[in-house]
Length: 121
Image: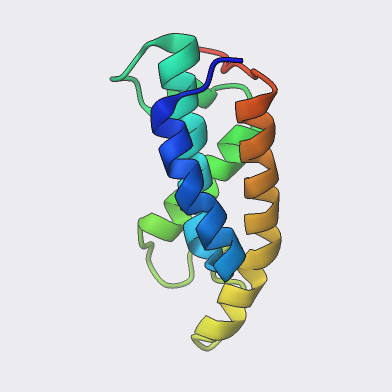
């Protein structure tokens, strides 16, 4: 089995974030692990945007979208999978991220250890 050294380094933090309940961090790091693994092992492409690497794979696209919603603010009122509770309920929104984080963590493990390949370079 071939593994990405960059991806493995990030997996350490993904696991720690998961165990700590740092759900937003799990989502962001899980996407980074998958992207690093695809770049290092499948495409050898270090310039293409993640969208090109994930093209056509709905689950990877969904993870990329969640990550982007966490890292790139949008105008108030923009539909979001992150801000699901009204009135600035930060703790409630963070708690709601757990479902997404658990899914992202499982997807990360499946993508890395199954030898899954992306669709386009």
